[in-house]
Length: 336
Ligand SMILES: O=C(O)CCC(=O)C(=O)O
Ligand SMILES: [Fe+2]
Image 1 (tube, protein in one colour):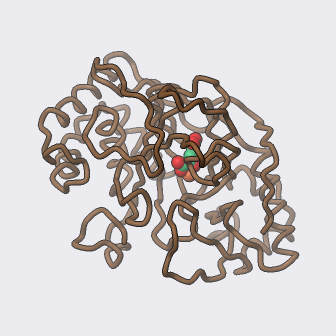
Image 2: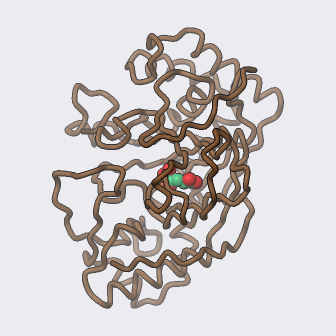
């Protein structure tokens, strides 16, 4: 495997893609929607109860119009960067934020303002889903550094997290990944990196484009999934329209099957790094990545495990629930 893991040198520290900064009135309106869901407590204190998701769907239509419009437009076409950034969302309702969790597999099971905000927003990009083999199938997951996992190529690590499509190995990988910042990295070093294939494609040689379009790559499941019972099939890294393809690669889990494929993958990574944006997420930032067009990763940082470390919530969305029905027992939200 080509473990590159060289430092990212981001082209831009600015936010990539479309940015929507909430006004104070919009922020209050979002807080009211989330507050209503928290107060109703339809899942009896559990986000993963289907009643909670049903109620979240219902209240989600009352989000401010500008947010709904931005999400709907992004769902139609994620633009040249494949990223949407909503800024200034509420994450707490006056109470102090608890300490950042520092345990493996940390998830958010209890409905909170932040969990309600990310879920109601993501529900406008499709159906919210999770994977049974990943973090216990929780719909709202915590992205936090975990002691002992520093060098892991998962979101529990703190070394550079290589650019990847989320769950690239999985047939029913998410179409969209939402990352909501609930606590900023106090060191300021951790930055969410994103690169879009629409930006990278023009930098690739004709040869690399051709090779990346052929089934000359294998992708293994990430460490967060543990052992999986499906056999990986060779796949192309660029799929669909040659002029506007989807991308399927994880630079720490995708193996080129021959030397040409290795060279083409290296060229693609270079093009991604060349066109990359890297953003220090602020509290209340929801970054949504189109998982067909854009890869994401994270710069390295130094956690202190004192309860004040960086803390994100993560939620996945699928455009088509029927497509994954065979993998979802009881027509629920968790893919088995
Ligand atoms: O920590 C980040 O900014 C990104 C982590 C990540 O790739 C993920 O949680 O899917
Ligand atoms: Fe990721």
